[in-house]
Length: 314
Image 1 (cartoon, rainbow, N blue to C red):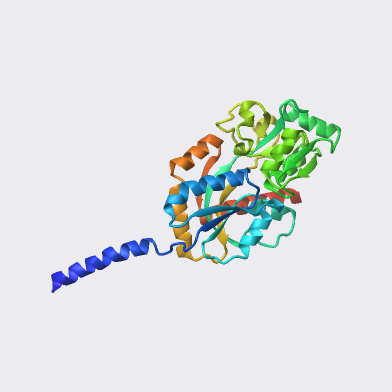
Image 2 (cartoon, rainbow, N blue to C red):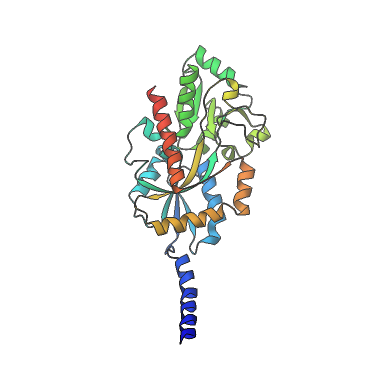
């Protein structure tokens, strides 16, 4: 009898363990909501992540573009959805870290979402058209100081993290440029190439290798350190401008997401970050690995937002 109980207990353990490991399974495809147009940095990261993570989910991961207002339209949409794990925002950028420093939003970046995982730290470049007005950052700043408002720069929207780079830079260096907002990085890139604007802030993956090929000239890196794929491009700090701004990307769910769904999503996407597809994307684009768990990711977003608010008030 004792032996029979032992065997039955062991069998129960064998059946319970797999069940516990998959306490939550998505019942429908998971939407990865992207607040910017196709072809921009957020879009490219989302699609690379969906490809890398696909084999860890029983249902498809579907990237959905909802561009506009620096990512705020997508964030507002997600904030009103059910916290069931089936809709995730590819966030961490403008909608999470800069827009609220410039204006009131219909959601709270700190409380309307539950952060799941940070996937990257994203360096940013200040670029100009090769053969355009400016060969380096010093020339652009000198022209802006000499004739305020005559040097133009693109961004992914008013209050976006790309806009914030020039807000901080102009405050530090004492110049005024004309801001030309677009709906994302891809339209900004087209404006620079067409000569519609003088400068733009873009992520390395958004330039599509145009800096390496010579179609674009990178004037500065906005991060604290140079990036490996463009080692010749100096940082803003190296050029005498005490400005450091990095973007970040991660996944966010609506507030109220249950712990078991959070854990399942976090662990699956964490495994995806080790996949060769994802590692190749990072190496190819120069994007920095930036893993943080949900609480760490939320703290990082809050720190950027608080710092930017303080800088703008000053």
